[in-house]
Length: 303
Image 1 (cartoon, one colour):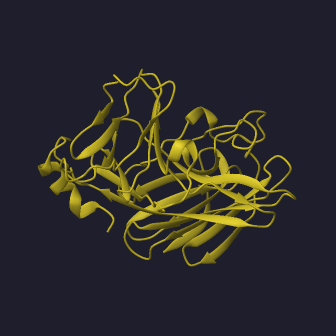
Image 2 (tube, helix red, strand yellow; image 1 turned 90 degrees about the horizontal axis):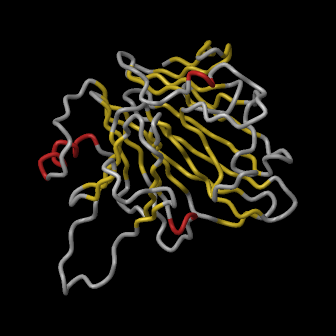
């Protein structure tokens, strides 16, 4: 196990968490962001914007890539408040840390972001917390965005197919954004999976789901990234009911999960959890929307 400050991406202060299998690098001078998540013998599954690395104090919000905690519904002021200054952090265990963005006038909402790396293996527990530090109620949802390296495919499970007339009620909801072309070849509604590919020189595309399938995955070469997706029956979600969203453009693809949309009174918090795993050095068959591919994928999925 290792937890130490290191230089990375042009910044002098970043936190490295590592065990016998994987390494995480977390920015300490901006964000916070998890900038890198990789097998010790492999490459970063997260995307970094090279031209945005190493800077601080910019006048405009910088994506930078990696994994971040954001605030939904998307709002030009609250969501895109600047996060380009150093922030406090606390080491909470041998390989765990909590990072805090204070609830200033610009933020209105304090964001606490806890990361715990397993003693062995690739498992990472992420706890995303929003706290209302203002003097008035705020309607917000925690929004956890992982910016994935280019060239892969996002996969989500479809529920088992029903029968008519036995199954008369709907069992899934698909949400599309105004710029999403429904004929886009990168997006596919299959029998077993919903998939979205990242490809260069393509326009943006985004979709969302009321997703009860418990996981999302990103397959890139010989690496498979998975994260858990929670769904609370009866809860209200932002963006017409989304607890999962994916966005892609010419640079990257995002795997996004959302907690419920709630109204926080002053001092109140909401917490949103994810569990990550990363399998490297695997030998996947070519992706296909088949029972055979689903069976190959099964051992790598969260329980």
